[in-house]
Every structure is written in C-alpha cells, then in structure tokens.
Image 1: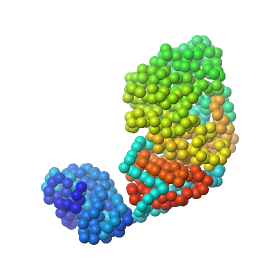
Image 2: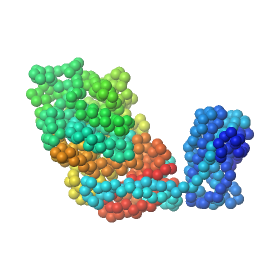
Image 3: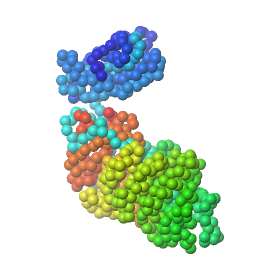
Image 4: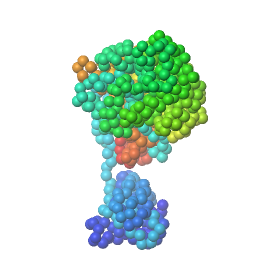
Length: 614
C-alpha cells in the first residue's frame, strides 16, 4: 500500500470526545490514509503503533508504521492486521511493529481505512507510538544435576537487532498447527492418582493440566485393559494379575462359547470410573483437552482364537474375526457415546494399538494393513458417521519403523480413506520421526494429521549421539533424548501432538499388567507415603507447552553448532522457541527472527524455551 499518499484530513476532534482523540474525515473513497505528526526515530530500534478507533459505519481499518529519511521521503511502511470494527463502538486495532530500517530519521503512526463514502469519519482514541525494549521470557531445565527434581530457572533477556543467527526463524514459512502435549491416562495412572488424598491430588492435577504449568492438553485413553491396568488391584501393587478386561466380557458363569453380537453387555463402568473422575477434574483446569482413544484388543469372543479357556492367556493375541468387523465398529460407537454421556468428548480413535506386536503377557491383537484398511473403510468410518459422531480416526498407531508394517503398509491404510480418517498415530520405540514427513508428503496438511501417541524413553532407539546411562533415573540422558526425538524431531516432522506414556505410576513403575517394569511416568507417587515426584518427562512437557500453545503454527527453523530447535507462532501473536543442547559443553547462540533476536548461553545437556511478542 502506498501509505505516503494521504487522503484523510487529520484534525483535532470536537470537545465532545475524550481528550487526545483525533477525527479523520475521508476526502475520497477506497483506501484512504491519515498520518500522525512524525517523531524522531533511530535505525535498528523496534517501534510499535497502537490505536483505538470508532466509526459511524462499518469499515476495514489497520494501524501502520511509516519510516522516513532525512529528506522526509518514506523508505518503509509496515501495517498490522486489518480489522472491521463494529459501528459506533470503540475498538482496539491490532498493533503494527517493525524495526526502523537503515537511514531512518522519523516515524509516524498511520491509520489506513477502506471506505466507500466521502466524508466518513474515523475517530481515533489516544494513538500510541512507542519504542519499547521487548522482553524475551526464558525457561531453562538444566540437565547437569542429573536428578529427577531439577528445578526450572526462569529469567528474561532483551530482543534487539541482529545481523545473523545460529538459530534462524522464518515465520513466512508455516506448517502444521499444534494441538498440544500430554500423556496416556491408563487405568493404572488413574488408580494411582485417585489413591492420593484429595488436596494432594488437586495439586498434582493442577501441576499437570494448568496451562501455566505442564499444560497437558492431549490425553490418550486405552479402550479397555493394556499393559498398565490396575483393575481389581490396589494402586500400590507392582503387578496386577487380574488387570485384564474389555467392555463386553462374559458374565460370571457364562458358557465357554459365549458371544454378545448385540453388545447388550457393553459397559465402560466400573472399569473406567477412575479415568472418568480424573478427566472431570482435568477438564475444570483445562476445558480444551484433546482426547484420543486406542484399544489393545477387541473382546476375545470377537477374535479368531476364541473361544479359549482363559481369553487373556499368554500368546492369545489372535486377530479380529472378519464376521465381527461390523460388531466391533459398534463397540467403538458405544465407547464414544458412553464417554459423551459422562461429558467427555473423544476427538480421535485409533483402530488398534501396535497392530503388529505379538504380546505374551498383556492383551493384544494383530491387524495387517489390509485388514485394518478394510475394517476402517467399510465398518468403523461409516459406523461413526451413521451415529452422527464427530470423532475422527487416526490409522496405524505404532512405531516409525516397525517389525511387520512398512511405510507402504501405513500408506495403504490411508490411501483413499473416508473423510473422517484424519491422519496417523505414531510411537517412538523404533525408527525416526522423519517417517512422519515421508507419509505427510503423500497426504498434505491439514487433510492429514500426525500424532505421537505413546513414548517412554527407556528402550528408545537413540541414534542421537547422547551419551551416558540409559537407565530410567538418568535425568540428563532422557531430557536430551525426549526433547530431540519427540519435541524437536516430532514437531519438525509434522506432529500436531506429542504424548508420553503413563501420566502417573507408583513407586514400582506400576501397577503393571505384564508391561515394562521401567517405563517412565510424568509423575511418580509413593503410595505408602503419598509423596509425589515430577520426573524428567514433566520438564520435557512443560518446556514445550510453555512456549507452544494449542493452535500454534510451526514455522521454518534452522540451527547449527549441534543445537536442536523448533519454533512456532502462537495465537496470541507471540513466538515460541524450544532449544535442546545435547552436547557435553555449553553453547552460546544467537537467534535471528527477521533481523531481531538475542544471544543466549545454554548449559550442556539442557533444554531452554523462549517466548516473545511479535
């Protein structure tokens, strides 16, 4: 826009308006402009412009900054976002902000308006032109302490002109939107949290779900038993031998060949009562939770290896019997409806957790890519649609590199999928997050979403050059690994959400239902003393959620000197940057965000997150 061509007369407002107001009267139609008096400006200094406006009728309006050289010639103009204020209502316009270019001597605030009416008045309330020193908020988690109680260090630094950067941001190149960060609320996790005294539990849930703290906004729920189920066991148990269940199991005394094709026996309670209770509390803290649900198995009577004496016997994975595909789709419908009745919206479901894993100690079920595609396309997707449910489907739900599914198998499930198939769910236990980009190349965002739905650092294929013990209590190792592989690697490869495994576990890393005995939780509870500790996963999540809100758009970010970084633009017009330093030495780096930036020194084996206003 040629903002130097003014066609608005800018005069003092009549005394009927508040002091300091101005009245612009349009002398022509189309885009018209009015400029405030010019004030001295310094090259390299960041200026902002802000104003409130009222107009008798609707018009499109924006605040802008115009910079002039010593001769009075305009050398640059930067406008903020336009707005359409309601008639006869004072509206604060989106601000304009820019760094004064070389050669600048003066700057003026400009109000630009579109009008089709000569004589249209625009009343400007106390226009502001300022050159503040922007502040960058910094959170640092220092991995050098190598303990599970490493505190955050919260400081600030200043934003100023830079000519180059170790980390360079390009906000003109935007990618996927971020739903958020979280973990799995398993039956065991819910039991452990519910075992706490209410006051302690409320504090823990606030620390987990409050957006100003860990800010968990994405939760994955197992549909029935998984490898962490405390069904029928104390929250203090290490192993729960009675933890197996689905929502439609044979009643006591039923015949060995019992079936229930009408699903008349279906019920999520009492199995999921603890989960429902925790979610109700979490929703009060963060009402905007995204819920993903995944089954580890269908009811055993629906499977090819049924009936069996013990439907959950070791090695009894089986496959879904094709004759029950339609019934199993209704099982999903009933699950979503049951949670809706509890006031909980299930946003996504996956057809099967880890569809190629032959479990030997906890429930599981095998799905080939062709079986999953047939079930999704012909049964699950139509059933959700027919029931009027907005719940969408995420395919696959297994590792970036798995033992029996190739990338082609994953794409087979997605090819030609119904409209309520939204994307892919991934786990971290094999391969690399770049696989997400390989699949995304065929299914462009926003049609196709990627969620990392499960990860626990123990047993992850590293490949990131992080040295040291891999044991569960090695804070620095897991801080570096989780940050690089999940947060930086995941988000830079199209992930919209990242979820770790259990939200909570007891002092024995349980109660376990035949699962791993050293999977990290986000919080760990000593059920004998009710003492709560916050693990490295808590810090990984908090560092990410503190700078990348739900709705943030990931932007192009390049880094060097061994640093790993990801950045995004938040809905509140702030930029968030997450930086991991896996090196054994500290690193001093400069961030360059369009000519503005800052320099910071990050300790070795640490993670820092930054946030500043644009």
